[in-house]
Image 1 (tube, rainbow, N blue to C red):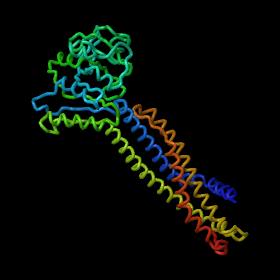
Image 2 (image 1 turned 90 degrees about the horizontal axis):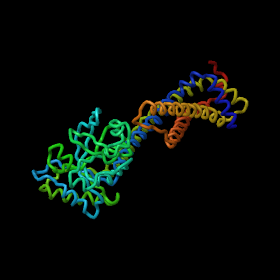
Image 3 (image 1 turned 135 degrees about the horizontal axis):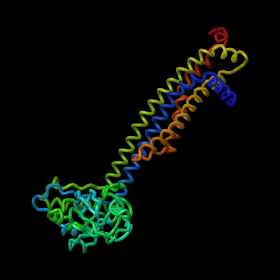
Image 4 (image 1 turned 45 degrees about the vertical axis):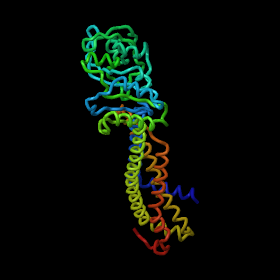
Length: 392
């Protein structure tokens, strides 16, 4: 009986192709809005989350906002590194500079730090070595450049031992970073160089005071303890003024991103649900028209013995098929749209989630049944005599 009902429902759908398509259109748009928007949000969130993960989930960034005319020193940063819950601590300063090699001249972002920065950021080297504490102590004019800088300046990556000019000061290249990483953790197309903190202070004519530094805890579980310890120290250090410094916890950023992502999914899901409900109203409207058009057919079927539940099942299955077919078309168009987004938006890698597809199918089926019940019930309850007398 179900097979026969499905066959009759498909015959009815195919006999009015344009009307059936327009009826499905609401479901197609609703499904596309759900699948495509959630896929884009997932891709954007993954991109941001990966960037944060590259920075490190056990890292604190400390910024000195007001040093109270008593600036932080390198020795004090080293003292922070001696805390039991702290694994590494490194100062960080940066400035724009001009880098030259032979006739090539480019703008470069110059970072001053210590050897611990390499460990905190989880960097890898293509060749050579990173800055050591001895380089910092002696203000050595040594530079570690990223792969992009090596290729732009030298046309190759094996450049350890070569000399470059940074704002007129000659630095020896001691290492090349394997991955083109920036201080934000993203793949960088910028030219970057890392030099001893004291060397940058010397060429920029500034003091060796520290305005920002990074701290890595032994593990993620000890992040709160590290943050509390450093907060307590700096609070006392800067005259009990909490506005004198700020501490950014990378694990907190990850939690915030996760919360924002969940909120966005619920919001987009709500928008898509409204679209699907509108599509369901369209299905109900057309099914009611169909019931009216087929009143005589219903009367004939009842006259030759069709039971009420048979009529109800036929129209309910027809509404369900319209909804499901519209959903499947919407999913197929969503896949094409996601491919297009990935092709033209390099910064986002959108991906369709099986969970979202299954939710779309389940919700579409629910809408088809929910909005098909009334037309089916109306058809099943038509009196046979009145139905046979009906003329369209």
